[in-house]
Image (cartoon, rainbow, N blue to C red):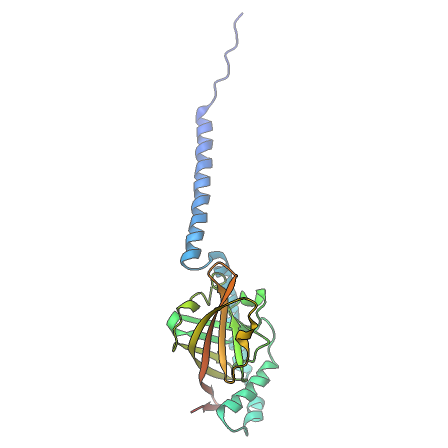
Amino acid sequence: MHRRAPPVRDDSSVNRGLRIASVALITAGLVVIADVVATLAWKEPISSAYGSIQQQRAEDELADLESRFPARPDLRKVARVHGVRRKVRGLAGLFAQRIHDGQAIGRIAIPSIDLDVVAVQGTGTDDLEKGPGHYADTPLPGAGGTTAFAGHRTTYLAPFRHLDALDPGDEIDVVMPYASFKYRVERIRIVDPSDVGIVRDVGHEELVLTACHPLYSASQRIAAFARLARVSFFALGRGRWSDP
């Protein structure tokens, strides 16, 4: 009686399957490594792509807002106010009545760290995905007191990634639909997240930019403090003012 020979195992199929699995694992590993390297070297790629889309929408919102404010009735309300800063303060008060959380409200430019970005009203999660957000419980630029903005350092375009590279004397320009403001950096501080004293009134108009610190951690905050140096307003056909 003849015994049936055992089936021959197809080693080539097994090896091919192992090769496919190995290539897949290696590819996945390289993707993860590339993402980590990109994040460490620059910013988180996926959220940055989404942030770019949101920032473009904010650009469009800001352009529309600038075409509508200040309108002639707004300018008439401050026409008899003496002094550029007083006129601008009046316009800032009117502007505050027209804006809402998540809306584009102006632009922040810091030449020394190559930043030029649209800022929005509010510091909620959705707000900061669009760009730096204005702390709604602080005055708008020009309204008097301390104005504060928060921004990401590693995600959603990471607008405030290089706050730690600012030096005293560096310029920060904030351009709102009703006026432009030039600030000069005075100092950088690392503070606890609960330190609300950094946005207190200091007796002059101040700008505070905040972000998480260190990178990839929310254990502390980095804050850049800048003092207002110049205010100017210009609207084609509607008036031009500049402080001394």
